[in-house]
Length: 121
Image: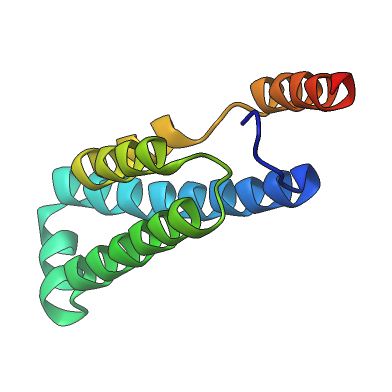
């Protein structure tokens, strides 16, 4: 993050929004897989009558697109890191999105380091 100018508060609020969205996706997928593995009749009903598999898939793809768009447009890193993060999200899916989310304590530390280096110049 050194050498790049960014609004740290905006970064934190955006990451919190992405975390909420990812939490909702995780809950939806966990409920779907729980029903899939526990109650075959209910799964058959919601899958064939309501097309739940397509709804979950479309929601998952929309969240992936939001993450990729955010990384590519707003995330304050350079190109190679962005490409690596996008590849991780595409290949690992839900787990990749959880792995990508930065820790807020580490972000605060890196922001403090960034501000110290900025004022030394």
